[in-house]
Amino acid sequence: MQMSFRPFSRAGRPLTLAALSLAILGSFAAPQSAHASAFQLHEDSAAAMGRAYAGSTTAGGDVSVVANNPAAMSDLKGTYFQADVTAINFGTTFSGSAHDALGRPISGNGGGDAGTTMPVPALFFATQLGDKWHVGGSFTVPFGFQTEYDQQWIGRYNAIKSKFESLDITLSASYDVTDNFALGVSGIAQKTSAELTSAINYNAVGLGLVNQAVAAGAIPPAAGQAFAQQVNTVVPPGSDGIARIKGDDWAYGYQVGMFWKITPQDKFALAYRSKISHTITGTANFTVPANVQALLANPTVAGLLAGAGGVPFTHTQGTAPFTTPAVATASYWHQEEKFGLGMDVAWTKWDSFKNLNVYYANPAQPTTTEVFNWKNSWYIAIGGDYYLNDKVTLRGGLALDTTPTSTATRDPRVPDATRQLVSFGVEYKASEHFVLNASYAHIFVNSARINSTSSTGDVLTGSSDDYGNLLSFSAQYKF
Image (tube, rainbow, N blue to C red; front, top):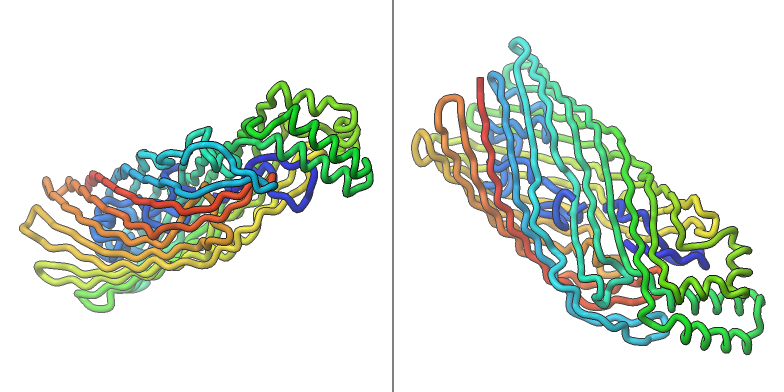
């Protein structure tokens, strides 16, 4: 998403409080997206990660089902506490070129590795209420991302820092309809926040204002040509500022699920998580170099700005409607004496993320729309457990995760592409009450083609090469 102000055109892609969608998360929680597409995260269970999240809600013994399918709490007999933490190491490097709206090359470096390493925590509690009822609560991070490029890189007008995260507090309940079939429901309170920065190409802003003034008949073409030369002298290319935006919002959603013990060896579960609609509210701040302040004070420019209703590049508030997507998941598990095999298929309804509309308190900043047109994505995993002995379980899994993005609308803030995941894990049962898990996964990411245009017409063209490493630990205590 772009974050520079463009006060002269409603068709531009200005200061976007956006990314907010960012969708708008990679993933603040975490970089880009660790295992799931775009800024979606699923790093809430070390045990499930060991098998690439296959059998995530049917393998049994994992309290993360409180957040992922409440009906599966039916399989937890007793009272449980579980804490998980996943270290996500994500890297992304860009190669390509950039030019401004006039075709002039933009100076700068390649941006360096824009990835990061950071932890994603999760906490779970579940208990029985009688023979048929189970209740639980959790704290998780289902969406998030973070990328940060060098401030002098060639794509600085498109993005510098992007940090987005959604934090969920979930309360769940399940009811055993029969000995083999359960239904569950969850209420979700979600806080979504974002912090975004980018450089402002003030040279392009000035030239754009001149072009608009000529097109509107405010000044004759000859005077406009002379004025453009003055802009290039007073505010030459490279006269940059920084736009920084922060915003957050609380919103609420739900989840429903079913859990079915088909046979003593086979289990199947379905879950649907609702979309959660936010109105992100935040503030925007700008740095304005002295030469740009002089341009804004020019009588002709000041007159044009007065007609716009105010002065741009000043502290302002803004709002942006943003929705985290709905997710449907099917999970299957087959159990044998020495091993278990599972499969998960998840569908994320990213096609609800078509446009990001941003509304500004500053009247000089018109409402703007940024086009994303993401498509729905699929996550398919297969994996299993091998019971080495009564205390040690070994795990492994493979997964394919498709991307909702395309070259036409892909942005360097979220350089997402289809990925493949390979994982391994081990469980140690220290006692009848205490269990430890550790897992590692590597993510192979397809090259992500980027053809991104900033709010001032600066074009970034090339590709991002990404990778991911996940290291997860959990401790579970059963009373």
